[in-house]
Length: 144
Image (tube, rainbow, N blue to C red; front, side, top):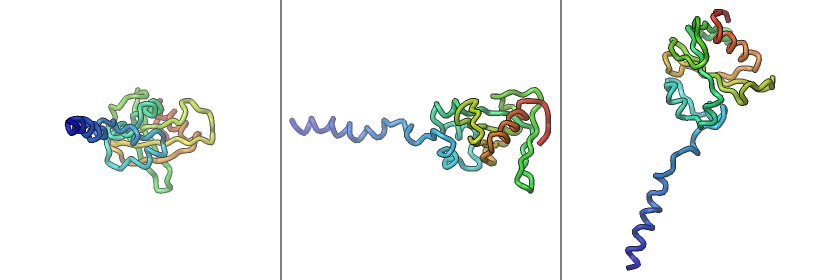
């Protein structure tokens, strides 16, 4: 009779790891996400690496073009009439905010660049540079 009691206990012990949803492995900040992303990942795969709270600090912007110049600077061409959340452009820029609307100038921004929703590059930007990029992508201007 004691053997019959061990079977349910053994099943619980064996099935317990399968019931974990894996949230402990999800990125909760930009540094963890930077370690996890790889070139070629899709936008959905990158989102799948993030905790729900972390996703709330990320905004996607459409772009017509993203180019890294030989001197290391980046050049962006905005998509006319676009707004945050749009993905209907050849390129997308995912901007990660540590704290939404933070004015802390020492706080950098982590950005991921996608071509047709496939990751091509990721980089850190100082607050002012990130703000300029965000303003550019949210307008119809095309400048660097």
